[in-house]
Image (cartoon, rainbow, N blue to C red; front, top):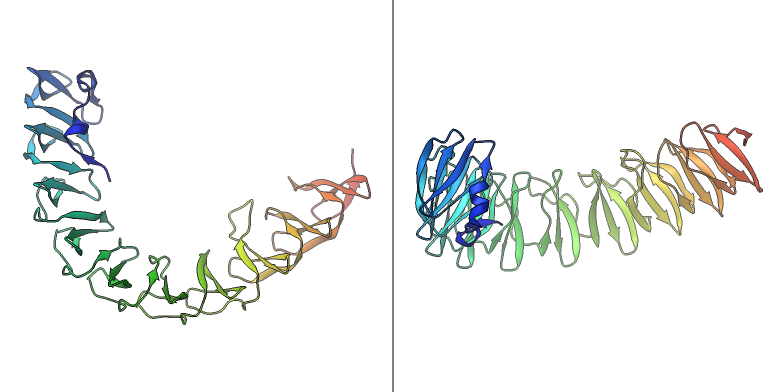
Length: 357
């Protein structure tokens, strides 16, 4: 996280003199080694009295005086007198400030929304919340600066989809945006919520929970990984697919499940069994049997290889030409080059041959 401190504000004088903000149409000037602000017509907006000045986001200016930092508006109105040791970048309209080795937050008007009492910023504002630490415990503050939970957790994650993980005594759980625990702290590891689910793990076994905190699958899988809007599950050496409700889409029969390489925006899934490969659609339905040695980049027409012979399938995954050619080039339009028994042809998207010119 970037902070603005005195070292970063002492940049070369010639750079400061040349600094100009097109967005605000103001510029700095120096008089007796002090900095002030004037508009492009030369009208002085604030007299030269600061040691350094720097434009930042939100049309604000960080100033330093006697080794302390403050804030001005773009028009030179001092909204924070120089009193802080550090001022961070603004995130979601808030910046943290340091004073006498303690930390708090201010808003874009320069008002302190929290006391300057925290030891550490665990995470800056993200989706409306920030996590702060005192000694070894964390709390959650909202955009009003209110602590919505007591200092009882060792760690709190960032909110995603309205939920954040919490951690204490080597166990994880989840809270909602009101600070209420939706699960007990019992998991060895968890992921953030994504598309309504989080993956949880106990004793090297994984399962899924929903936004109510309910376990919608038993914690019995070796691994669970998201793919499209589904999840890859594995037990021992076999893999399958479940949906976001925990319903099985396929049996545990595949050796490999992974995103297919495509030439379009379709989220096709490629699967393997005993070194043979096939394709599933976005919903996990098999569209190409698991019988080929290799499948090319999936598009409107895709080459497939079996026993070193080439054929091709269409965008529905249906075989148009069985593998019999020595080579088929990738389709680019309505026809492509093919070689059969040393003779070169054109073949069209229906598999019909025409002479090669």
